[in-house]
Image (cartoon, rainbow, N blue to C red; front, side, top):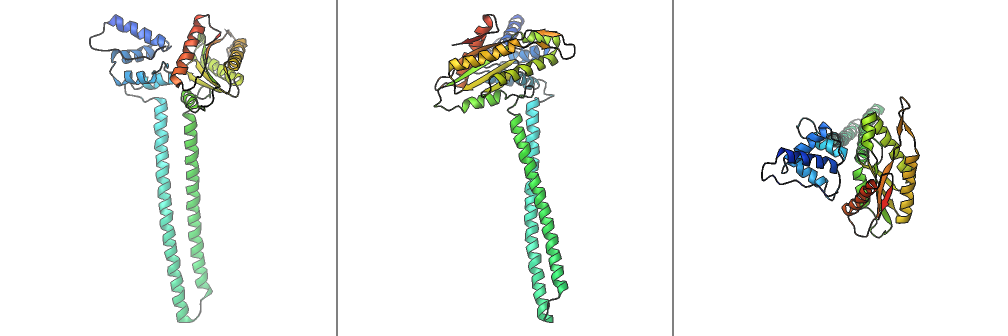
Length: 341
């Protein structure tokens, strides 16, 4: 699949042509022909110089298809009434982190100021004690007890402030770690997401010549959603993701978007990678899925896959596009099969 590019809008586009291009866009991106996706495609294609069209062009550069999360996030920007769920969550976490950092800084400044005041108070009390001793020739126990009590009180206050600051820092660290993990994890399947997968590819050891990439797509997944509903479809995706992770243990399995999964097999050549992906494909096909509520069988659920070896110096876009083309050939050859170069 080629990267999508905005068409020129030098002249008014006939309605029929726009309609055909919307259909082609939905097919290329493997988006269901529902009202929300039609609306999204219309806004992308009717204003090829607009921000939405340019954002789509950037995201699909290198032949990458849009994920459902990206379509939802970009689609929410059309009417300006809602922000994408991921972006909104990110903004809230950043705002919360900034508030906690500001509060932590205020607390540290306050503790520093109180510590300085504490030192001045001790110095003043000591000076007063020396003056009293010089006048009377003796230091009373009451004087010492009073100074000690003041010192203990101020130390307890400082310890309380320090404990609160430590808790604040621990909470902030925990929330930032959680936010970082959430940003790289698919909420439905709990697998790493597209971002995590692409980052892992970028971190591959350049000297490691043994690595492969596979793209797996659920066959006829739209039929599952149409017949049984999206809730059942989501359960199917979770089950397939879990089976892929089990069959490909030791390698990175990610939900790349929609009903598409990607597998990064490091440290293995194409022959071993073929065995792993083929075993996963057979395990998925062997399962018999049923509706949880009615126990009605869903029929056979299978996946098609494209597998390619990663060449030295190749970019992610090059490798993924090749694997995606191999996946497309597997679909053309009847589905429920693996195609590799």
